[in-house]
Image (tube, rainbow, N blue to C red; front, side):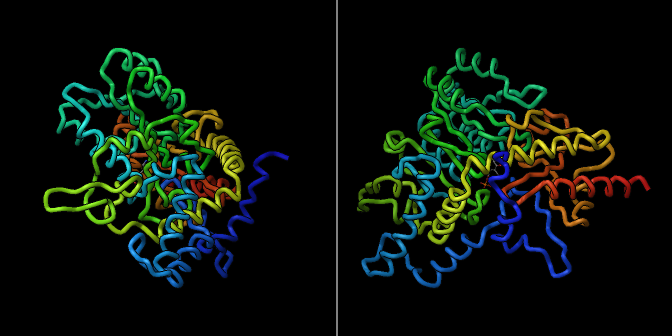
Amino acid sequence: MTHAALINPLRVRQDFSLLAPTEGGARLVYLDSAATSQKPNAVLEAMDDYYRCANANVHRGVYRLAQEATERFEDGRRAVAELVAAPLAGTIFTKNATEAINLVAWAWGLRTLRPNDVVMVTEMEHHSGIVPWQIVAKMTGAEVRFAPITPDGELDHEWIDHTLASAPVRMVSIVHVSNVLGTVNPVADIVARAHAHGALVLVDASQSVPHMPVSFAGIGCDFMAFTGHKMLGPTGIGVLVGRPEILDGMEPFLGGGEMIADVRTDGSDWADLPNKFEAGTPPIAESVGLGAACIYLSSLGLDAVRAHEVHLTTYALDALSEIDGLRIFGPRDPARRGGALSFHLPDLHPHDIAQLVDEDNVCVRAGHHCAKPLMRALGVNATARASTYIYNDTDDIDALVTALHRARAYFAR
Ligand SMILES: Cc1ncc(COP(=O)(O)O)c(C=O)c1O
């Protein structure tokens, strides 16, 4: 028995109403989980139950309903912290991963970076790992440098080491798993090398936390960002994990209610972590949903989730390679990549691919995937991308391949 047998996608699909076959037997082949995952009933039910039975604002009420709401909200935080081995005080809820990275860029970067300091990002970052640093670099006089990628879609580690040794790098902001290439970067190793040169490291774990065991403590980074909606949870909630000793020394990002200890006419004092970075009413139902998502993922087992991904990626790499002229981006070794698989067909525009395979109920994404510097490095304007998750099986890959042949035949007419 292989590890992949530990996840039974047919059984998993029963937990996702949206993936149920229609009365006519048609079924959605959802291959866009890198954009957002579908949500299991356990998540929907937890959020529904919260609104029906426990809705109140948190942290403010002494009545029992408000205490119940606060408990459910904080249970969500505990589930998230446990999933990624993060300190509870350093587990901060944001709107999404984008806001989590902006929080660090603004609250840490704006006050810390000096002219000519370097923020190292990579060519394979999502725009959310680039633009916040560009904005803050412009305001501080710091410089954003991009670690290049090799032809097979890995980071150029020689360039990274050379730059760490020769430039005043203060922050390395790096994606764990690329949403385009699928590349799994050796983040723990990069953290050790960056720390040796005095730089802090932010890991964008948006595409790794949903798919594999990820430990904040194990990676050893200073900050980690991820987003609820890609890991079976709702939209509207993201997570920044930070080392409490660094967060303690930072000024708040946003000001308002919830994040204060005292407000006077001559100034204010900040609440303890994590509330100091959670201004205003937080995403309460979303925390409840995200907590349920973490419990669901843990019940499947993240090792099994990852083994299933490697199994499907192996199958997909083989199946897609048989299509004449199809170019696959990123590492060829399934063990070195996640479940996002970008490809290019010389005679078909990615948008035509996405539109035509949709006629066969196959959902794939087309475009620049919020990674324009990477598109330029790859020499393309856009790619088509299929991305798998726990509810996909090899039948879904076969459906994609059949739909691609049909799309090609349509244009050859
Ligand atoms: C690697 C990576 N980082 C960050 C993000 C941004 O996530 P969000 O839009 O939820 O902030 C994404 C979303 O596609 C992503 O793939």
